[in-house]
Image (cartoon, rainbow, N blue to C red; front, side, top):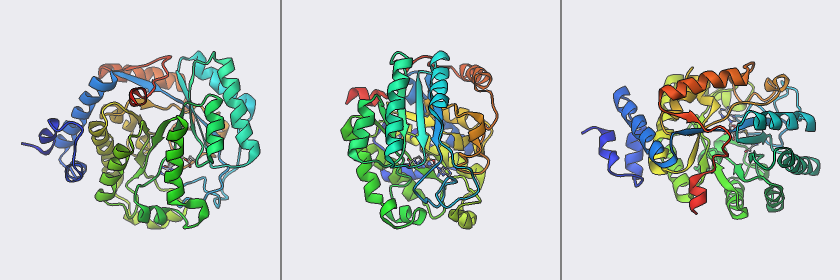
Length: 360
Ligand code: SAH
């Protein structure tokens, strides 16, 4: 009996050892089997639809200095920008008119009053102009409870805050050890999001220097035990203007890292059958059809980039980030055809809420 067959009957009760075994699979046939099983679990629990989230990268100004991130405060090789109101509303209307169903606003971490107010008013205006029909996700870092509450009341339903790793020691290899980058504050922020009422999402990076298979297994168990509603996780990709680049020799080769990303998504789907899992952009950096493959391995959310083209180069989280000059609707049409070949379809016009969140 193969590793993966053994696990079909275990459903979502995988042990740490079993998770480690699955993440360690090297045989392509066994990896394929794992992905196909995850796809089947997704189909049975969330259906055959892939939900769209139009991604808007609101600002690359950031107070933090995460060692892996291209928009970290100390990187002087980029222009710092913030989209203006018209640019955001135009993109939101584009998402509405093209039936995307939902929108994500992501940004560097900013705690200034002006920004908090700006997001607040954007939320209200977007809802007003789109008949309250767009689901809005925020991914704007750690904020205090009042800010989370204020944005929730203005109509943000979901929030994505990646913990980056669930291992405190590893966290401090990836971040400066200071007040601005506190592991316990990040976990506390995630709990506050859930308490505020958001559909709460988290995620981690895969294939980091110093990261072990045990760390990754624990990340999945963290998500499971937390009862997370949605996950966006993807491979770590080097960025030459960041401190972690010095450790690039410790990073697994691209294809291995990509497959590890795929296995993580598949195992998470087995562990948490009804959550939303995003097929993230970083997967596509390491493999030409990376995002499509992830949707065939258990992911069910796709995030086309709607950031106005002139800013995309400045929201360069990692080297080789794809989609810098693509026309999104042409891309999506082609992508939809590929999905259909695989028995899937885009959930046009649907918010695509996490079924897990509805259940709780
Ligand atoms: N400021 C927000 C959003 C951060 S950017 C916050 O703190 O939540 C969104 C995500 O990009 C990060 O959470 C991180 O996981 C990912 N990211 C950053 N640099 C990366 C890299 N070099 N490779 C892969 N993913 C990266």
